[in-house]
Image 1 (cartoon, helix red, strand yellow):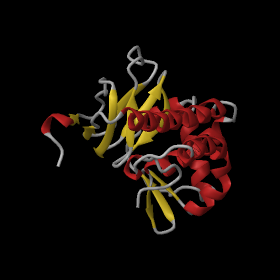
Image 2: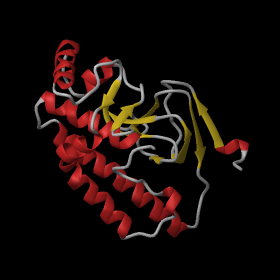
Image 3: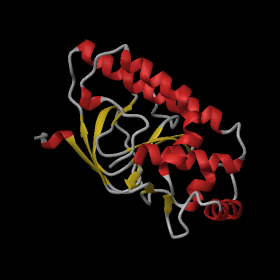
Image 4: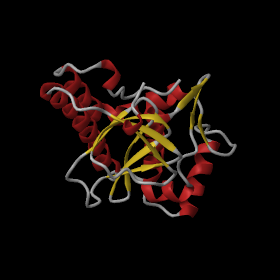
Length: 214
């Protein structure tokens, strides 16, 4: 059991401002830089809030009422290993951000949806459901397009059979998504995989890139 002073409860839209390492017990946390999405963390994921990022370069915002646990100080070599893996997680995500804005807006929506499916998606049969954690305005901001253009592209994805025609974002044929868009993440995945293979770290603190929540 966790001690009371290790548990942090944040309301929807609040910012995690205290440096340290945390595991998400419940909810979703968006890591953003300059109002652009870097990655999402869900239940069971570990995040690191660096000490020198208090001026807004990195921001950790919860997207629903969220509970986190502050990880205790460990032996120096354990802390170093854990921090290196978490830093490489961030580096891999930033690589994707740089590449993200070199592709057309329509493809950016595909890639963003695929990223969300990988990081916080819930697989249901052959499909993948993305929890309702982003507004249309946020999605439009993240892919740098107007709301009107987003609606147009969303309809195209529906007509092409990529997403369900209902409300929300249900990715149809998740294996097809992975086969078409997974290569966009290969370089970032290699950065993360190489860092994990070169370090020993407790399994529960690892990030499992590319897996969806079952």
